[in-house]
Length: 340
Ligand code: AHM
Ligand code: MG
Image (cartoon, rainbow, N blue to C red):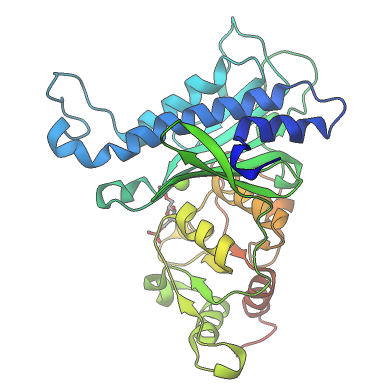
């Protein structure tokens, strides 16, 4: 089929045909997520008009209460997803605990976890931000409400993961375990169109992406890796290039297409940062599933991210993710197997 006319909807349907017992639940779920993404995208694009329309927490010229964009994105995701009858529970980085499906709505066989607007502190300065999502099959039997057990699954059990990046254009990138595919929103007719089929991350990249202001708080292994990455050794392509936006979806997306490594290690700046900042279920797992499907790697320095058994919804994890060789080199430093 001509690439130009491959819309997200058609693509999902074709992917679902690969599974003879598929019920169409998946198509419905991803369609709901794509609709939420279009609504959020529209509002993110309008965010620069806050000075005209009124800032969050105030009233706009029409006397209406303004909502913070990340809270708004959370509500749009929940409203788009709860009514479809395909989910038995949800969880969002923007809310504590399991989000139940209302009583009058049938409970489906999937759960969805999401970060509705990651990097939202960047909205004010017009930096790309994103929505990240992750879908699992429920593990509890029956068709009753889902439980925490359904949500606390290791990442290798994901059946779908993706993100939407609100950047110079809006893109939705997703995997169902058969490669990674990227769709760009054509604003003229409001459709996501296949623009990046079967994305593969280069095996080795030139970019390292980390918040170096935490350098003094890192373990020696992380320090040694970053020292290695920036040392000038032209024969093996170093120094690597430093690029850090501070918006996970944007940093990850660039590295996925160009190759490289993103690190958010733990540090000792304060006791709650031992495991870094990023959340296993809402940020690390979906990105790890995507990067592996693209031929890359994701680790906490010692373990494959997708093998970690979560114990709580808000669990944090160090994240080292990107091109396979780059992540493997970083792991060697972090594990103390090499120091230069
Ligand atoms: P958020 O979920 O509160 O938006 O925070 C997550 C963001 C990521 O997008 C980004 O990688 C990280 O925080 C940046 O943190 P830092 O400013 O510590 O480098
Ligand atoms: Mg986040």
